[in-house]
Image 1 (tube, helix red, strand yellow):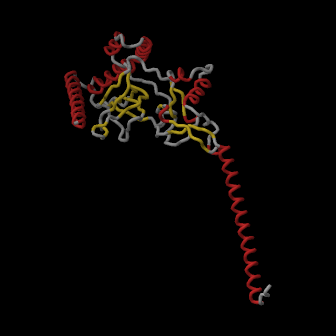
Image 2 (cartoon, rainbow, N blue to C red):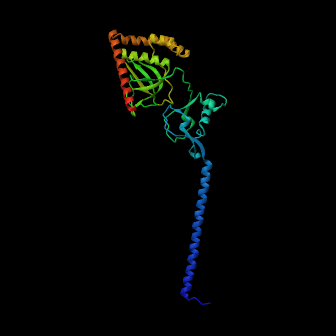
Image 3 (cartoon, rainbow, N blue to C red):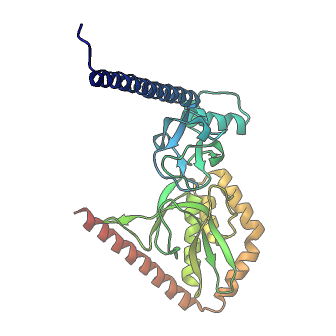
Amino acid sequence: MATLNPLEQKARSSFIKGFVIALFIGLLIAAGIGYLYYQAKVEEQERISRQKSVLVLTADLKSGEILTRDKVKVVNADGDTVPVNGAATSYDQLLGYFVNSKEGEESEDPAATSKKNALITKTDLYKNTIIAKDMLALQTEQPSSDQRQEEYNMIVLPTNLESGDTVDIRLRLPSGQDYIVLAKKKVTVPTIADVPSSSTIQMKVTEDEILTMSAAIVDAYKIAGCKLYAIRYAEPGLQDKATATYIPAADTLRLIYEDPNIVEQAKATLINFYNQNNEKYRTGVANALSTVDAETQKSSLESGTASEASAQKSDREKYLQALE
């Protein structure tokens, strides 16, 4: 076998040494990559093991708005980010929790439960928010047979009023006396060609509320300086409903009493409230009217009614034009 010269031996030795070093470094890198992969896999498994199924919103909701099944979905979230009280994995389970814990009822079929109860939001909530029980409240939803969607365009509205807002309808007399006509009503602002109406709102009202509003509108038209206006609730989901303080006139009350559409409980409540508070309120109205003669009252009433009808007709015409 030929003997390698010193230069060849040196080159061969350097090659072997370099190969061994490169191999060692490669093994170290491979080991490091393997370790990192192993660590990542372990962390991923730990992350998955910590995950919990939760309900999240699929749309923005305003304070006081009803939460329905189509506005929630189930997702897996990191357990470290899930509120302790947000572990419900279905709408029925969430609703069942409220019914059983807040009403003290025994467990019952969620489908039957959902027919007579609803969940409302306490504050404004936004899409992809994980739902926690403290964000919601239980509301019994049992619309009466005389409930209707009514439209009003003679109420002074807040500048920033939007559909879904909750308001009180109030009547202020020239003397400064201020009465709540309807309390905590959720309103819809109709749109014409995608433009919200500046003067009209829609509300769900019962027959007794329709007549009460009618009486308040007549008073507002007859008394110069009267203001029938809406005022928004700041956080309707957290705030209690105000107590109505406006008393309809005697002839309006008579209609309420004789109307077969009014449930007996509503009749009794209104009549009792009227009997207890009538003198104080009607005295205030009488004082306001005493400064206005009958002819002026009649003229103001006719003018206000005509203006209301004209505005309603104009909005209707714009709506129909938008459909063409």
